[in-house]
Image 1: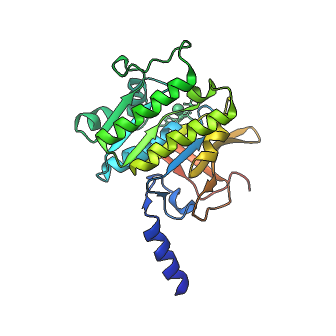
Image 2 (image 1 turned 180 degrees about the vertical axis):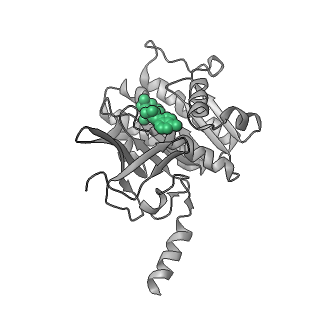
Image 3 (image 1 turned 180 degrees about the horizontal axis):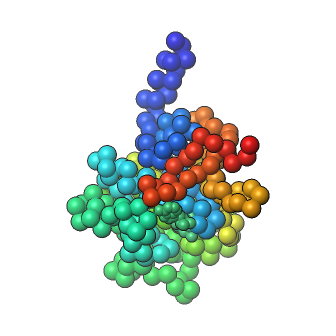
Length: 248
Ligand SMILES: Nc1ncnc2c1ncn2[C@@H]1O[C@H](COP(=O)(O)OP(=O)(O)OP(=O)(O)O)[C@@H](O)[C@H]1O
Ligand SMILES: [Mg+2]
């Protein structure tokens, strides 16, 4: 009884946003905390973009406005990929005003990535852009696809840390629930994970001659998490967490 009361109290303190990934919310006590920044880390091809796109797609189907910011590849590419893999029509959602896509490669935003631009200055401008867009659009869900490339150019680790805190602070202040994907190739992922409210890791396990997709939760502040590695499935329906572990 007491336990149930405490649980109910926790729920009202930290309302949750359902991930839309079958099997995931059970691992983290019901979904992402609303108004938090959550990282999805993994090497190339582990399913980061699919995971976060499904989070956005699910939200839109539930009437929650979405925003996608694509720093690393053009938004056209992302739209085509999600359409051809799963039939998620981000272009139509955009036309209907349910989704706002911010393409950082868009010249109108004058946020050109160039080796001539000081990376710190660039990240400060990027943060301002994110702040402005969140104020304008007021989405319930945000997905930033792969921040790694931006931070990799910043040499001093303490700067990476403070720039991360600034960016994440702006996102939290807006009340949006955010998923940020990060690659593992350059080692900057740890700074981003430290600064985030939760961190989920996607990977591949080598079992005999087979590669099996896997997922585990590294942390979620203010929540109990399942301490086990699970199999992650990608199919025409999207991404789903299995109840099975990759290891017997
Ligand atoms: N319909 C589908 N059924 C099964 N697997 C699929 C399907 N569509 C895409 N995939 C797989 O999903 C993976 C794509 O994952 P995703 O693009 O999310 O990776 P990522 O972690 O974002 O990689 P990167 O770091 O390169 O951006 C690919 O390996 C692809 O083969
Ligand atoms: Mg990707």
